[in-house]
Structures are given as C-alpha cells and as structure tokens.
Image (cartoon, rainbow, N blue to C red; front, side, top):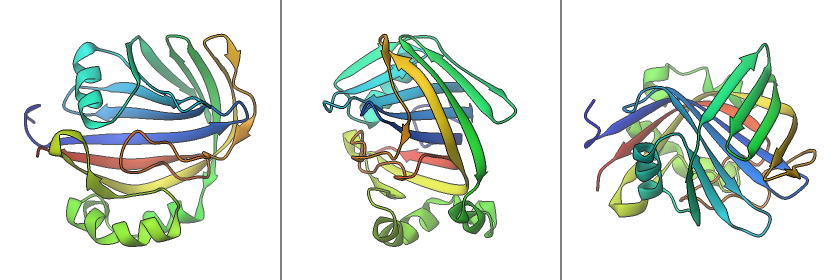
Amino acid sequence: MSVSGRKRFAGWITGIGTSSGVRVVIGQWPDSPFGAFSDVMLQHDGGVRTLLAPTAEIAEFISQTYIFDEVKVVTVTVGTVGRTCVLTAGELQLVWTIGARTLLGRLLSLPPRRVTTAPAWCRAIDPAARLLMRGVRTAGSARDGRREFYGAFDQHAVTSVAGTWAGRTLGALRPVEPPVTFGFGSTPRRPSRTAVVTTVMPG
C-alpha cells in the first residue's frame, strides 16, 4: 500500500484512565503501511497532549492527523503474557490486564468483519455511536483535510492498570474522563481494548 495515499491500520486501540488524571491511548498496529509498530497518546490532567512514536516518519504522519502539544520519538515496546500487557515508551511504563469481552464486543463481532471495517459502514453508524457512547466517533475529518474511519469488530474490558509517567505514579484504573481531545473523537469512557481497522484517506 502506498504511504502517500489511502492508509489502512489493523490492530488494537486501548484506552485507559487513571486516578492521577492522565489518560492513555495505546495503538498496536501489526498491519500498517509503516510495518508493525505501537504508539502512545497521553493527555495529562492539565490538558497537555503528548505523542510517543517509535520513528520520526510515524511521528510526522500521526501528528499531521491528530493534534498534540508535544511529540517525542522514543522506543515503544509492548509485550503480552496471557492477559497482561507491559508497555515501555520513553518515560512511560505501563502494565494493564485485559478482561472479558464486553457486551459491545459481542455485538461488534456479529456482522462480517469486511462489513464492520468498511468506511461506508463507519460513516453510516457514526450518528448512533455518538448517541450511545459519549465522545466516540466512527467517522470524521482529521487534520490537513484527511478523512478517518474507525471500523471496530471486537472489544474487551481493561480490568487493572499500574505504571508511571515521568517518575509520577499514575494511580488506579479510572474511566477515560474527561474525553481525550487528540482528534474528532475519543476512546470509550470505559477502559477497554478495541480491535479495529482504521482507514485514513487524504484530503
């Protein structure tokens, strides 16, 4: 797939809130135009938005699609043992546990995946997603006139979290509240890991 045209990213988005007020969104993309990679978006309790990306090329693409106050290129690693995930990204260390499939995850897994991940489907269900889940969008406009579509096809709850950011303890698991403001939509309020195909189209 050409990196200059329509881009498709298949993987998982994990959204986590913490009692410190820091909200974390982790993208794990085993299938992307840039190869397999992971990235992290953080929003501090004071509102500052930080991107942690593994290469300058990926950082440039993401920061041209979403809005950040600071961008850092760091090594991003995510390991999984059973239901436990361990992430290291610069000054961020995070461990979280994946729980059972949510009711939404069961519903998302019912239609054929080729349907639920298609941009046309994402556009059609966007009004319902906005109504049912505060801050969540499945279609919208990104920076530089780009159009973006989130085709979710499964979801599991996140049941625990522990970690530090810049030497500060993040605290216990909390809802992603207030919603993050990197782009036109947030992750679900309930901490969760969503299987998704994200499609980005040029303006």
